[in-house]
Length: 204
Image (cartoon, rainbow, N blue to C red; front, side, top):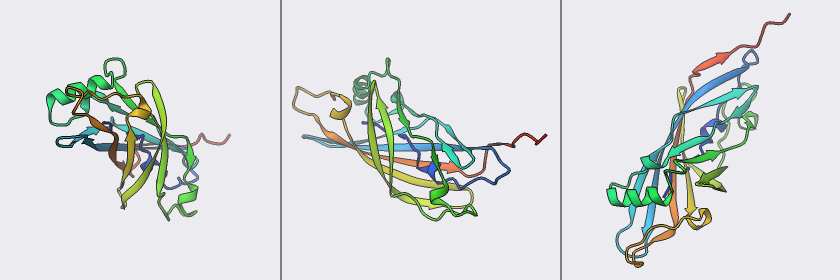
C-alpha cells in the first residue's frame, strides 16, 4: 500500500527544457500526490492516498538532477484508523519513516529541440524505490500529460508487489487478506517558473 518517485517522480524532471547558455543552475519546485488501490481476497477492496514531501529539481547545463523523493509513511490514509495503524506498522514506520524514490541524473536534450521546445514525452519512466531496507526498480507508465507555460503535470501508473519488498500485510483470522499487487498512481506536478537561478562567474 504505498504511494512511490514515488517515486520517485521524476517524470516532471525529465520534461524540463534546456536552459539558456548563460545559466548554470536553475531550480524548479515539484510536488506529487499518490493514490493506491488494494484488492482483498474476500470482502470489499479499498483505496488510499498519500503525498510526497515538497522537492526541488535542479538543472545544470541541460543535466537534470532529481533529489530523493520521499513519502512519509504515516501520511498514508485509507479512511479507516485501525487499518491505517496496521498499514503503518507493516511498513515499520518508526524505524523506516519514509518511502524513497530515486532516479539518475540525465539529459533533457532528447526530449527538446535546440530552441528548448518540448517535442515528446516518455511513455515509461524507471526509478529505484526503497521501502524499509529493500530497494527495487520500478517502471511506471506515463499517462494524462498536461503541459502549459506555467506547469507540467502527468500521472505515473505502476503495480507494486508487496512480496517483492518483503511486506507481510496484516490479516483478520488468517482469512481476510489483501492481494499481493497494489495499483499505484502518482500525479506529478512541476512549476515551470524557476525558484532560483545562478549565473556563471564572470570571465577574468
